[in-house]
Image (spheres, rainbow, N blue to C red):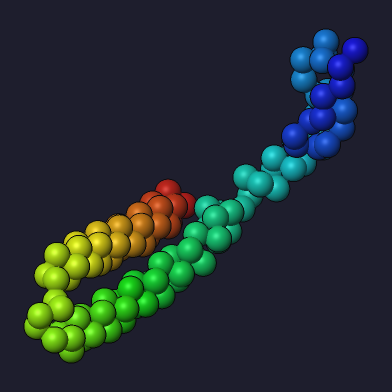
Length: 116
């Protein structure tokens, strides 16, 4: 008979049983998980949001530096498609990171409204 490990409590049970019968540990862990607010459960999202803000700052700095270097090279070596490509890439990156931060703000705002 094949043994399966329960994802909640870690106990092993037979495949024939279909599910773990250790409901005492399940309810304790589920109650603890439900008692946490959404902000506590997903606190890692705040870390990702801060990281996204730093990435936006870094991307802006790199774009400005690249633009300055581009205009410092002689006219005969300039290829404007490189500037256009980096501009499009910059706009796409900044808008993606900004939308990511706004989605996280929306989730925490929604959790706050649901809590009240």
